[in-house]
Image (tube, rainbow over all chains, first blue to last red; front, side, top):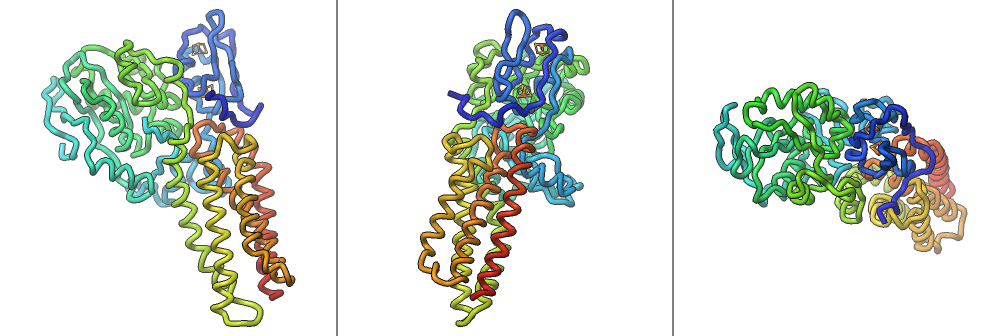
Length: 116
Length: 348
Ligand code: SF4
Ligand code: SF4
């Protein structure tokens, strides 16, 4: 089963306002973790602990029925942020500090290794 | 136009568009390999804008991708034998998912590229196939409102693109789910390893020098003895945390990554202690062993925790929660380990 890899319990910030949901299904299309499910023409949170807070559902919901504080679950980024280093996202932890200049960027291909 | 995969040109109402080959050449594969190992990943990009693949016409589908060469290669390779336009947007050379998370693969960027490429003049339909993993950065309804193009999210894995196209732009639920199978975990190991080894290269000389100090005997003999133990422990921790944990991820106990790293870390520490059991005679030897028993798990769990960034299912809230517990423990274990190790040199 795909569900064998589930992260921590009861931590995610995902919230769904069933009142606002029109059942358009966009969130179902974009969620990479099958967190949401359709039920009686609306959507409900089916496996909350699988949510990785990517924010795709909230971004693509036309009625703003979904709320999640989106971010990248990456320890190195959290450390960099805590140390005040200018790097908020995981993919740039290899980025040089002076890379305000785009040419000196050296991004790592970490997440999304299947490349698309 | 002077990119190796460009094989010709196509005339469109919006100007000349480069025609590309779906075939990956040895150079493309070598480039991907190097990028995986963190070598020369700068400039691993493709030029922005529109490309044509196969026998394109105004009705051919439009695929959007990042200007990271590996994303682009993956897309054109999986479209072999098909026709379509590829619109490359500026993600600053970062892959689709990371760029979407960073906000560079965005609604605005897509809208801007559509305008610059004059896509509305090239195709008669108003549909864009955007990778599903771009969705954290792209709002389909906003793209529609701003450009008139309707976003259809393609499947997560490019190998499913054929099915998706044949099924009339529909993906099965499985195709919409991001998994993290062993093959995918393994290709991420090199980046983790290279990063850890870079830091190790700075630490290794220190281990030899400090190992050579204190107690009787020649500096070089001691440096070799204690320094080599330290280097072995360091490298073993790196293997445990950056190789073993990723490979065994689903089977290691615990949900938090630092916790998953504990078992490999303890085993690695035990191996060091066993290899060193002859030294358990005097205070110095005992301190040294205990020091590594603390340092090895601290380092292994830290590296395992770092793999959250490469994984495909960790949430930021979860990572913060596990770090609140793990980091203080790692810092305590590591500081105690360093002090004990220094103490072992003084006691020698
Ligand atoms: S995208 Fe929003 S409105 Fe549409 S089904 Fe999901 S929650 Fe409901
Ligand atoms: S935040 Fe991402 S993982 Fe969580 S429900 Fe929304 S789309 Fe799915």
